[in-house]
Length: 92
Ligand SMILES: O=C(O)CC1=CCC(=O)O1
Image 1 (spheres, protein in one colour):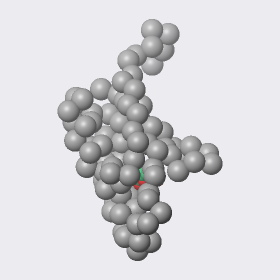
Image 2 (spheres, protein in one colour):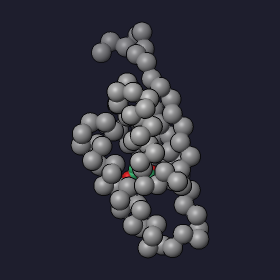
Image 3 (tube, rainbow, N blue to C red):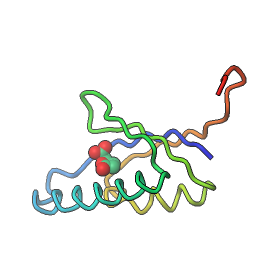
Image 4 (tube, protein in one colour):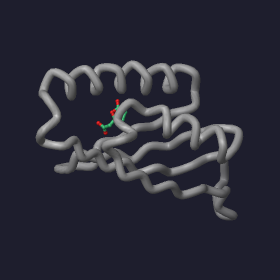
């Protein structure tokens, strides 16, 4: 199952910089593990925003929920999920 996911990151300004940097480092590792295993095939920065658009390929809604709620930045994110279906005009 394919999903388009938008993540908007809002790190509180009173979070100590070292703690924020550590969370971002762990987030990067977590994300790259999922990219390597094929479940997170695309991640794109939204120009001018601390946001990304990502494509996830997972087996179920529950798996996507587990993946997203496991993000180290999850407590500081607003997340929008759009399930994707094949377009009838797609030639692939
Ligand atoms: O920087 C972001 O958009 C948040 C994020 C998701 C995965 C990652 O490495 O950073």
